[in-house]
Image (tube, rainbow, N blue to C red; front, side, top):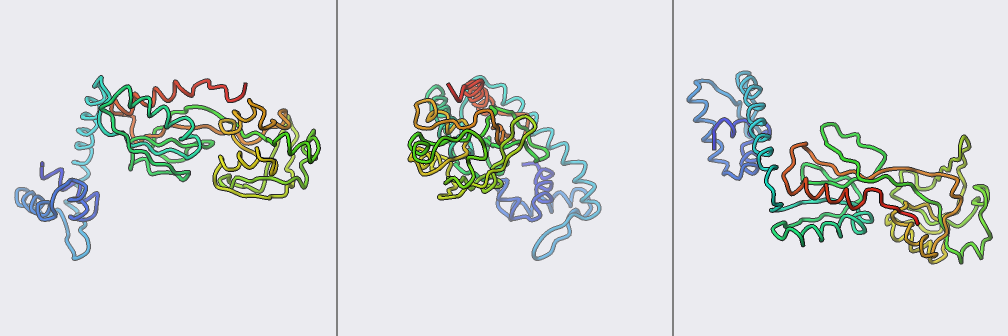
Length: 294
């Protein structure tokens, strides 16, 4: 490996050991590469201590000139590899639990069946995953604040107010937001403010004071509890829609609207290998225009 590339990674990582792990090289080899480079240039590039290494003034200047060059080489390699026709290799995907299991995972299984040389590594988490740790992250929310990331919007969604027919039979019809006051409710703790539901209709806003009887960090569990008649719930279309379609849940106050959001395919770069690009395209085709409700 080019000693200049090793030097750049040492500065980026802050130590010989970390650079060696990143490059798949031994610490002694990394140190030897840098010493050899310093000998060729006739100048000290790094100030070494027992705990870390820091670039000297000459090292900082040298790094500032080298780093963009090597980044350009990496991007050139990715651009060329992205032109391969057949998806192959490892595809690392991180996805949220509910949307991932219902939509992303089935699409991934079908993708692998069509392209058997693709091997997937799947992570499920409702917390944001570092896009640098995987090839693709599926995120839900109203937008993305991370600078430097590349995001493609897959599908929009809205939270729906729902309850089971048995619950409505026991507690009476709900014809206005005021009817929700004191109603038993199943709350999803993944919401930014799970105890506060805000409903809007034209220029009107209502925040009902419901009575929580269950809280869960699983949207699927909230829907199950609502179908069982435990209480009213506020859940996204992709989870509540099937139960509304077959009558297990009733969509309440459809003229009143709650939180809206979207799911995004997030990557750390615009230059994507063919496997990642092909899977994002397929996932977008699957969910695009998906009618959550009949």
